[in-house]
Each structure stands twice: as C-alpha cells, then as structure tokens.
Image 1 (cartoon, one colour):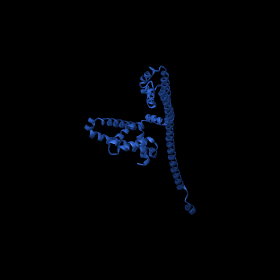
Image 2 (image 1 turned 45 degrees about the horizontal axis):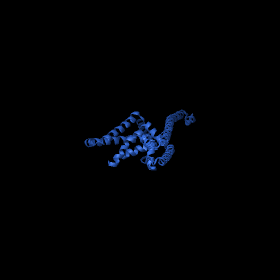
Image 3 (image 1 turned 135 degrees about the horizontal axis):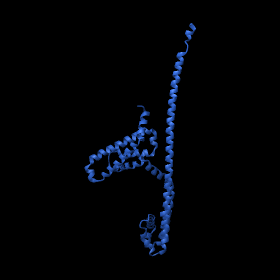
Image 4 (image 1 turned 90 degrees about the vertical axis):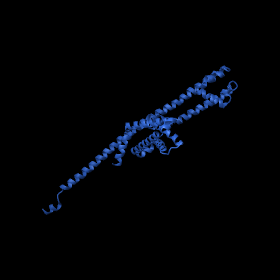
Length: 280
C-alpha cells in the first residue's frame, strides 16, 4: 500500500461520523471511570478493572492521534487543539503518580477539541480577551470608585460593610453579583434614607450595564468565530475540489502521454524501410 493510499484511508476513518462518535463515547466513559475511582469502596474493589480500563482508554487515544497524524500529516501540528490532545494523552503515558493522576482528569476537556461546537465557543472566548480586557478595566474603575465613595459616605454608619476601602470593595462586589444586597442596603438606609440612590446607581451601572457589555463582547466574538469557521470550511471545500481537479488533470496528462507514445510507436512501425526502398 502506498503512502498516499494509506493517508487517504486514514483520512476517511478520521472524518467518518462513527469515528467521531466513538471518540466522544470513549472520553465520556473515561470520565465516568475517573469519577468512580473517587469512591474508596469502588477504588478498592475494582482496582484491577480500573487499571485495565486505563490501558484501554490510553491505547484508544494513542491510536486516535496516530490516525489523525497520518491523515493530516504536517498540518496536524498547525492546529493548537491537536497540541492540547497530544499533551493530555502524553501525560497518560507517564507512570501513575498522585500528581499526574490529577492531570489525567484533563482528558475530559478533550471533549472541547472533539466537539466542534464547544471548540467554537472556547475559541470565541479567547478571541474576546482583548475586548474583555477593556470592559473589565472599566468595571474595576467603577467598582473601586464606588468602594471609595461608599467608604467616605457610610464608614460611620455601617463599618462592617464600608469600614475601609478593602471591606467596601468586597461589599460592592456583593452588590455587583446581587448577592444579599438587601442586607447591605437595609443596614445603611435605616440610618441614611438618601443612601438608596447610591445603591441604585451602583447596581444599575455595574450589575446591568457593564455586565451586558461583557456579554455583548462575547456574543460578537462568537459570531466572528462562527463566520471564520464557515470561511475555513469553504476554503477546505475549495481546496478539496481543487485537489480533485488537479488529480484528474494529472491522470489525463498521463493518459495523453501514453497515447502519444503509442501513436509514435505505431507511426514508427508503418514507416518504410529505407534500405528496402534503395534495393528496389
């Protein structure tokens, strides 16, 4: 079997739906086994079974990566998610220690690299990091300003919530998450009725406006990632069609060359013999 034929066969296997489903199933089964190992009763009772399952999972994942490498060739390492898979599976080949046993739970994260929809979401989050940095910086400025303002206004009224900037920062964070905010507001408003305005402004600006900005940045990034994925799919389809066309053209060129050679051979056989013509 030629290298090209082997690569085509590996590509057909890797791209097959049943292969993708098998990988997802094995990752989920691996997660179930890892979860069962956290129970002491199961860990002691099924030690041998768990060890056998570990070898089966590792062997399957190694074969999976070898097939993907055979199918993609050098392009395999141009995909960051493939590096992640190689590292996670590579750790599994290290002899069991407590530290590496914990790292092996990262195999469950391979669902992200295997399921395209999950991969798109994670890529969108990474793509959103620059925009999120600006929004988070704005949020920190608002929180810090609110904390300093609250400490100056309500330090004497509610020192347990606004005694200093550090305590006030934690209080404003509670307001941001709307966690037990009535407890904070009631303790202050009982002695300072005007304080309701402070809480309304802080909660509206930080909990609703800024957080919605963060959601907006993520949604926009997700849409960009989806569009980018569609463009890459179109490029792959075009490249595949181009490769098929070039293969057909090369095959036609080979056939034309063979026909040309045969025509020349036939033409050579039909040429008159110069010596015979001279003898006549």
